[in-house]
Image 1 (cartoon, rainbow, N blue to C red):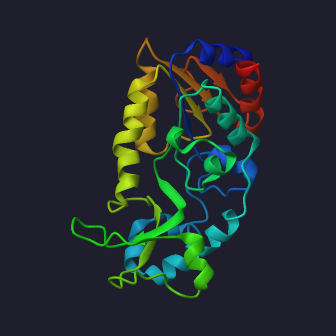
Image 2 (image 1 turned 60 degrees about the vertical axis):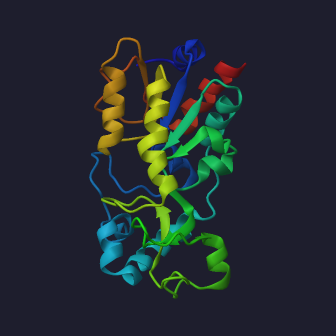
Length: 260
């Protein structure tokens, strides 16, 4: 276990700190999570929207589940954790925020877009589901579509008639908009490669890509791994610093020490 003062000192001494955030940072905002503390998915019926196969099999049924999720999150406000990260980015204490979340709360908090990598996409836009090599590139803002349609209407592309899909990477999703694929496969790996300190906030590490990223940092003497998570996790014993507190409590304390 480490103190927030120790973590603040590590960030201050770091040349390049990257923050990797998961669902835990948004819990204080009211964001629903889809795993219990053991990492198992719960409430499987209401989280069917998270799987690409259900979208492909029956887009209308998929949207019935998705709209329930969207209605829960569309009016959420950033947590104290999001705001603290934004402040540290603006103060150049943190170089990049990589978020696994699709809730747009980092942008709402004011984190500058060039400093934010949304590796799983976002809930702000809809794109044509026909994204093969010579597919359709139609895209529309989610709220723009909702201003002219209700949730009983299946979002469909006006150019080729295919369903529209939110610009978020679903489980086993191999067809996402190019900018989402670039964030996941290029921008995030490059940011992690350049960092000497990785601060992981509010993630269970059950997505293999981010498990491997933490493993890479933990295995190198010249890199530092910081974990901020309420519950113990698989990398606690390998990290240079671990804080078992919610993000909305720990991050503002770290910010105040780093900036002031």
